[in-house]
Image (tube, rainbow, N blue to C red; front, top):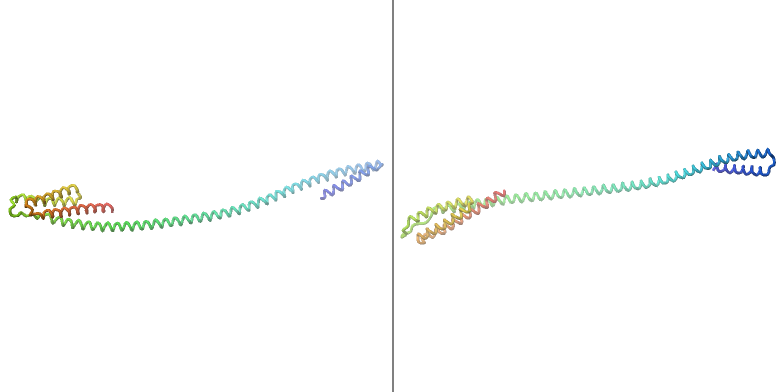
Length: 249
C-alpha cells in the first residue's frame, strides 16, 4: 500500500512537471523541471521495483498460504487416515483375539473330547479285559470239567458176556480203547485237530467193534464213546478260544 501511494505521488509530480514544462518559457525553469523529472523518473523506477517486489512478496505469501492450506488439508487427511488405521488395527486386534479365543475354546473342547474318548476307550478296554478274564475262567472251568469227564472213560467198561468165544479180542479192544481215549485227551488239550479227528474216529470204531463182538451186549460202549468224543470236542473248542483270548491281551 505504501509503495502504491509513493507511485501515485511520483506520477503526480511527473504530471505537474510535465505541465510546467509544457507551459513554461524559462530555460532555468526548464532545466529545473528536467532535473525534477529525472529525479521523479528514478523515484518511479524505485517505486516500480518496490511494487514488483511487493507483488512478488504477495505472490510468495499467497503461494505459502496455499501451501499452508494444502498442508493443513494433508494433515487433516493424515489424521483421519491415522484414526481410521488405528480403529482398523483395533478391530483387527479384537478379531484376532476372538479368533484365538475361538481356537483355544475349540482346542480345549477337542482335548476334552479326546480325554472323554480315551476314558471311554480305557473303560471299554477294562470291560473287555474283565469279560475276557471271565470267559477265560469259564473256559478253564469247562476244560477242567471236560477233562474230568474224558478221564472217566479211560478204563473201558465193556465186559465179556456168556457165550462170547473171542475173549482175547475184547481185551485187545479194551486196551485200544484206553490208548485211544488218552490220544483224544492229548490231541484235544494240545489243539492238534488232525490227531483229534483220527483218535475220535478210532474210538468210534473201537466202541462199535466191542459192541459187535459182544453181540450187542456192550451197547453202552457206543454211548460212552459218544460222550468221550463230545468231551474231547469241548476241550478242543475251549482250548482254541482260550488261546485267542490270551493273544488278545
